[in-house]
Amino acid sequence: RDADEGALCAFEYMSGEGVGFVLRHIPGTALPLAAPAAHYCLIDLATSRRDADLPALLEATLAEALEAGEVTDAAIASSAAQRAAMWRIREEHSEAQKREGASVKNDVSVPVSAVPELIRRARAALTALVPGSRPVPFGHIGDGNIHLNLVQPEGMDPAAFLARSEEIMHAVNAIVRDLGGSFSAEHGVGRLKPPMLAEWRGGAELAAMRAIKAALDPGGVMNPGTLLP
Image (cartoon, helix red, strand yellow):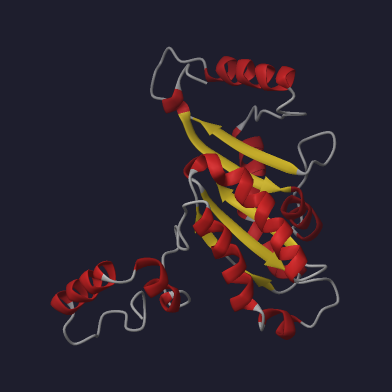
């Protein structure tokens, strides 16, 4: 809405599979809606304006979305405890996936407008690549950063599944590239993705990174093996 864009401080996406894993594995969690759904958004509003009426703003926005068929159900936290319970569903995603089995993690970003297409295309590509696998996209839809994780098929040997990590990541990255995104998002390049850096940021960009690294750390003692291949 155009009413108060600055009030939106979080807009998180969660898939039905991911929320289901949390409810299954994390004690004390509960779905604050009447029925499960395929997709969820967690929206957090805040403002420093004393005259702002955030509940009214949110209710009006949800009413429009419900009427348009963009939203099927909603729950609004009426206390700090309810807010914390909703956020816990989002924050326990990684732990719940761990308890469900081995997973290959992809931390990528695309333009915000391309997030729905990323999720649709990646889900189709990954389930075709590893039949029975379970895509669990979630993350910061407000800035286009999605954790497009893939959980192993039920009953599959975890080691055999993780041995396919590289092809799984390449399948996701091919879609990300086509959508004008980046192979690396909030968690950076780190130790996992340096082999991909030359393909995405090669030539002059990579040379500049190396020059800066050499100038600041000529002995190579600062976090060696991270970022630069």
